[in-house]
Length: 295
Image (cartoon, rainbow, N blue to C red; front, side):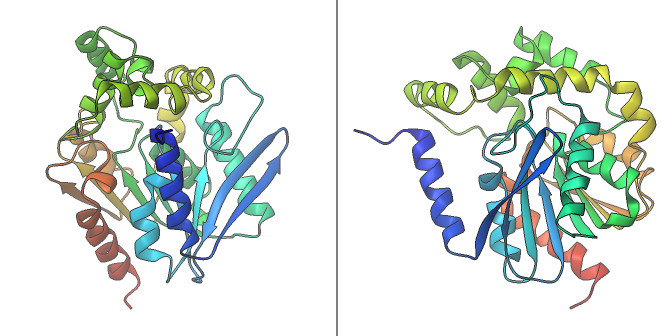
């Protein structure tokens, strides 16, 4: 029998993490359970917070490859993703932050270098806003942010003729193609039978709960604008120049919330520059860390 797409991804990911000291950490927080993959042995802790894409550990492989010999790395699964779970049908950004803080408290982790992408960028921003004493530095990659105009998502819905939930969490071939178009600068070819495998085995996991998370962002818009106000921590903002989902034009407004921020625009990249242009991203990240903490 031929190997399915999900099986191939999971086998490669398992091999990747088997090459370095890695353990799986589960922390109960009330009725929720937060999971992260912990690897590396350094004194500093790097906490990686993913967006809505599948396989958080796969998304962060370039960063793990770069820093696992110098930092302790926590690749978190937000509630509703990976091995983390919650009985709640709708999970807010505030709940993600509260559970993440409680898990860090239970594990005795006082301060982190916090890296968040997309939806995880909003989670990271709210965490840094509410708990500035816990954040040594902050990296935001194409983040959802309080200055973002949600009506932009409405315009994407009109272009694709379907709700944004179906674009970010595709259910059919057309929505899969729409998702790729808004996510990457140069969508790669995948035959239809493989797309169907991806839809059936990867994007159907917890799909109702994840759609509810997206609706919760709309419902909590006023709260997030009022509360995710930024941080004085050293901050690196990284944007793919071609991001169609959260365009980089919002970076100037966001920078006002982070007085110690620097913006890096990565050409020929869309919404996931840390995966599309990993070496450019890693060079920017290394320069940021070195500037703050010279080797």
